[in-house]
Image (cartoon, rainbow, N blue to C red):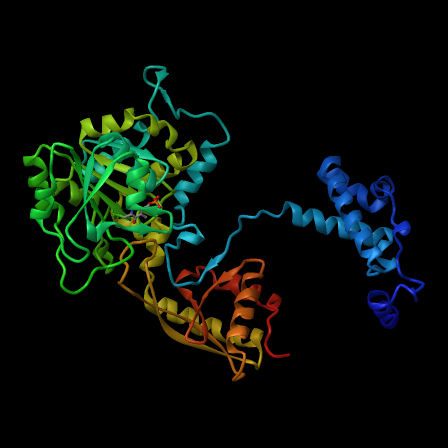
Length: 488
Ligand SMILES: *Cc1c(COP(=O)(O)O)cnc(C)c1O
């Protein structure tokens, strides 16, 4: 059997095996669909999808037959039904999947940033199947404003006069600039011309918004007098930008919002600040590095503050703008506001998330992202010790698995240099050669698990930071499926 299969796959056309399938052995589409094993598939999925996949399967089999790489056994009725079922299963498998984030970066932009709180998930489930009052004022029975669903909460939590929300913080910045500085100048420090995640670059955003960027100061030092000297009758706005993903260290100077506010006021100019992450509560209350808060920025004299919904705030993707009433009104009237408006899904999730801040004492339990950030180190270490033997057993003798101390980070452009003391597993191949390739292969095998595991490779080891692992049992349960290049 094995020998004849070999000869089918590798045999020459001059010497065909008797069990090699020829294209004329393939059933017609009609016949395939009428086979008994396919009936159940048709009942489950309907004719359109099953016929499409059956056609694709037959085309593939024909190519294989022409390449003499097909065995007649593969054309039996059961084998065909099985292949068809497998194709349908794959076709229907969602492309967007859960993964385990063991990278050590808690708010990971590539892995979906903040985890949605249970309160937001259940709100979505409750609201989204039916109609809702998204833009309907239940009191008057007339047209409502979707922003009003969260504006009250945002004002209450930040002390702002007014608030508006859009798709994300990049949209918030774009909209602020487009609405407040069309064809006019916006003054920004050279030390704050940030690039966030590739495509968001402050000078480009400025150009897209139709505003003219006026850079002041130098990369490392900008002074109040630099802003003052740049103000002309063409100036529309002073803008501060939080340097989310880098720090300028050494001989540095920047002008804090509190120092800039009187200058802006003296020239009757608005001062806006793009906080990026922005935390609605003091992170140091949980022993985390402090991050500037929108309410502090307003108190310091900023007229507008923008920040993200899915960074430290711990909610859905959103761009939040809080500040002075008349400026927010101008922003809301700009045509881009309509183009950048939030959809009902994140809006419902945002309202539910913001409501959690009314009970700040419970946030470390109610916000899953904060729960991960505040997980006690001893817990994470215990999890590493508990999981080590199972992973060692799954990887076999070719690998060394150790429980180790690790340095994680908050992520997503907040607190860029601060490290989070964490713990996890370090996986290293014992072979002295081909270490890089072995690590890449193992990383790939972990990603191929039913629940893909994403770690990081560093210093010739694959590191799994266990801060992000809520359920160790789920991790262990799929280890028998790990198929990795461990040298045999
Ligand atoms: C993250 C960030 C942005 C972009 O926010 P999104 O919500 O990702 O669109 C803009 N500015 C700063 C300073 C940021 O940190």
